[in-house]
Amino acid sequence: MSERRRSRNLRPDERVLWETKAGEPVRAYLESRGLGEAVCKEFRLGLSPGSGLAQKALEKGFTRDELKGAGLVNARGNDYFPPRLMFPLADARGRIVGFQARKLREDDPLRGKYVNSPEGELFHKSAILYGLHLSRQAIAKQERAVVVEGNTDVIALRQAGFEPVVASMGTALTERQLKELQRLTRRVYLCFDADAAGEEATLRGMELAVGQGFDVRVVTLPKGQDPADAPQGFEQRLGGAESYVVYRVRLELERAPDRQEGFVRAREVLQRIEDSPERQEALRLLADRLDLPRETLAGLAPARGGGARGGAGAPRLLDAGDRLERDVLAACVAHPALVPYLAELSADHFDSEVNRRFRNVLVTGRDDPELTALRAELDARAAQEALDERTGTELLLRLRERKLKRDLSGADLVRTTELQAHLAKVRQALAELT
Image (cartoon, rainbow, N blue to C red; front, top):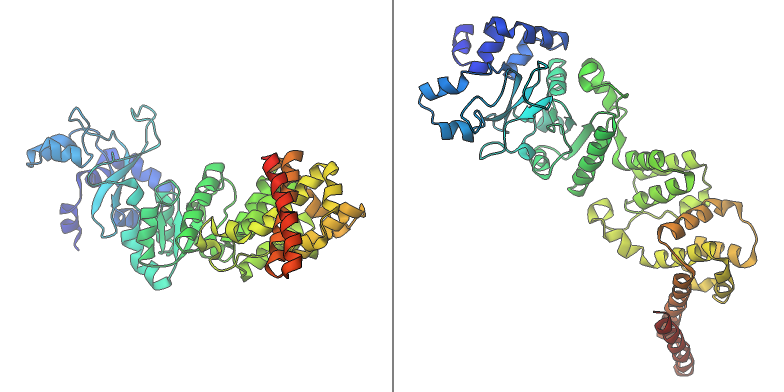
């Protein structure tokens, strides 16, 4: 396309940016950010004139209702955007449906550093991935999509030759955005800012993506750095991306107030994940950070069947029996007065070998160094679940009831009568408690 023909196709705000004196300081700003004219024109950046746009549109035959529906004028009929750097927002087919405007002056009447077009018939922020119309082909060909926070990150990376990149409009990924990506790939890299807000956006986005079947990786940047700060080396950063489970375990360990709580949080994550090389890597991370023995790691059984994709409820159903045993032991750790009642239950009341060993530790009073971490976990569990002595008594009865019901299924007639009598007593005791 010739320069003259292209000039005729420019929007008014593009003309202001590239062809007027008012655009000089903004062009200098873009240059200071390392963004060249060619790539900025590819993304069709502009500069809102601040006034006059609505009047010119009216002169060309557009109605005020049409301009308001497009988010170009406010309720009074004046231009919606003051003088700001304009990023046109396009749908997946490249049709402009709204704008994001960056603050340039201190006397700007709008508060936010970035302001979007108002939500309306055309523009829905949650449905837009910035730059998708330009990166679709690269994402499909390379079978991966990198999601960053800022528009300028997308522009800088594309300028550096890295093309399969989009921005999430400054927030965590949404369901509608993920549906757009699903048409192109199932592999997603998240690269949000290293601050608290970016960490939360990463967490929310990846949980949603994992739930929809994506293979999620997380690219961690040094604090204070954006992808646009070092675009040439970005491909190399992807090589060090962490898997979903490794990132989650590391994050839980860093956020936990102490070692015991860190173990409990990491365990909750790991029990939802099917066995895989990534899960094994997360286990090694947990073991290294907390200096855990093999016996403790052996008790962190992976999910069966659905894994992380099976939903948050699946592990709870699979883990119900183990939870009862752990709650009994946790109550006895917190309330030593319950230990004599635990001694009345044989090791056969416990399915897990680790739980059997810890039952013996409590009953005999002997120490087992390999179960130190488990004791810390159970102590934290008792506090978290508010397991008082009365609840502990009920749990012990529940465990006894479970064993009696199992024994009944294979007992002869004489033994059945005896077991039923014991079961009736247990149920009576439970009824009196509750």
